[in-house]
Amino acid sequence: DQQVKQNSPSLSVQEGRISILNCDYTNSMFDYFLWYKKYPAEGPTFLISISSIKDKNEDGRFTVFLNKSAKHLSLHIVPSQPGDSAVYFCAASNSNSGYALNFGKGTSLLVTP
Amino acid sequence: ETGVTQTPRHLVMGMTNKKSLKCEQHLGHNAMYWYKQSAKKPLELMFVYNFKEQTENNSVPSRFSPECPNSSHLFLHLHTLQPEDSALYLCASSQGARQALYNEQFFGPGTRLTVL
Image (cartoon, rainbow over all chains, first blue to last red; front, side, top):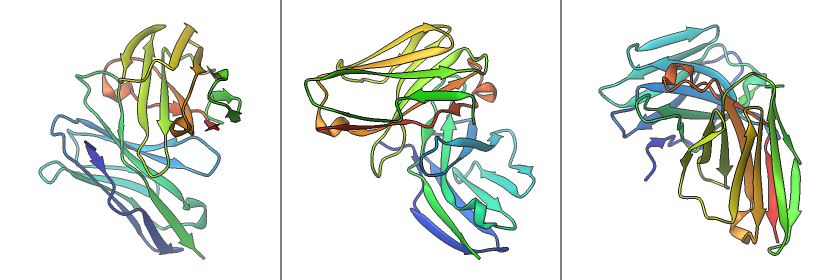
């Protein structure tokens, strides 16, 4: 049973606009959330994370929002750039149950000029 | 470059072959992981090693056999695989602390495996 869901397999956004990628989770024990970015022929690279004690974390153009009551998080990219075109994976973990990261299926973002 | 390298990058093997995937990390991490990514599926954790000890085995068939001789190297030995084992196999490493705060994992580029 998939505990982390990314329901949009793809997203297309114009350069300069905001990209919003969504992620939902079912396990209320998850307390740490990460976003990874993956280019073709490369492994995923860490982008940004958030602990469950926060509801927002910002790093440059990237902001992650966490809504614990809705079990929902989102990644905002502002402004979007063509180089942001990649597959974005949401991941979640429970710090009390080991090292496992539970990944979503990913959302493919295309930023058009 | 993430500091995690994997070889080979591509591998084609028959169902009766024996092959090994290699992963090496240059980050001074203590935990290493094998993941499998099949088409249209999320990354699936296969094995976790922490300080060379296997801490998780996610119900992986015995035709996959991991080996971690030291904290920098991780192998995945393959034998009598099935065509449905064709996938991208990703290695990752992290600092190894149990707290999730330190669980940022750094991934290698993966090995694209095709089983004929």
